[in-house]
Length: 222
Image (tube, rainbow, N blue to C red; front, side, top):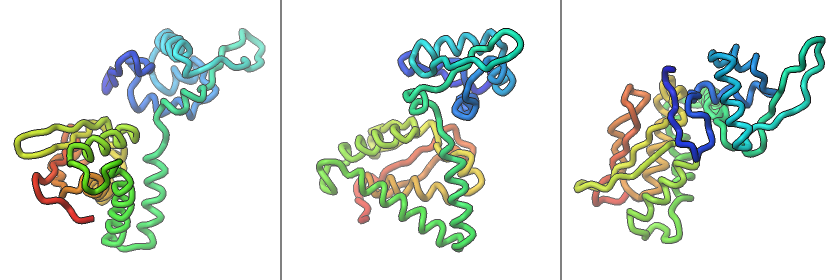
């Protein structure tokens, strides 16, 4: 299956579902084999196997079958943990907000507004040591927050300084249409780490990940 997301078992997500397929689950409740087969495009037996795993891991629960003249079909709903675990439509909502802002502001003003938002988030990530915390501590705090937001990020310490790599762009489709959205990420990282950021790889530009290289010695004044 193309574009499959291979997620370790402890993440309690079926390993053969793709990210695009997972996006549909909150919108298809109550979940039925028939609906999932039609929308996701895998076999009925494959859907049943996934539903067994989801129910076993507490992400879905059975609900009352819909009355019909034939054999009642099992229906499922996402549990509270399921709603928290599966992707939400952040990108759709973000695009709507960006469109509204763009109708009222010039392109430069939109970029500036995104930078302000990124700075605000980044400044909240300074951690217990504040602005004087070692860069390694600040990077670790930023990485923790990025992963909470779904970036699948990691930090790499090299001879030339720190690099942050994100294998999941949470605004990927939006960034392909509106490159200025990357200003949010850059500003957030600059404020959070206290370093200038070189955005040297970008998924929206066709790279296989987003890479942010921190300046080695010159802290950014935020």
